[in-house]
Image (tube, helix red, strand yellow):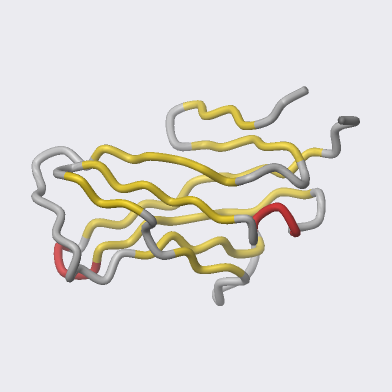
Length: 101
């Protein structure tokens, strides 16, 4: 079973599993008042279908945990983590796979 695999910034996870990922942001002090969001979009979409706020911020670590992702249909999506105050933004792939549990 896949559960969750991360390669660089690309994520592959099993449909129905909990999304729980920690990012370490180098060279930037993260504070709780920053408007940090992880957004998941359809590959050709502009509007997020899911937005997740951090569940933990400690130093340079940001943790996102959400069961909303488990409801996404099998397929390929894109996601980004944005911290507008510091113009930090990246776009990467997230793939949801069907797996027998």
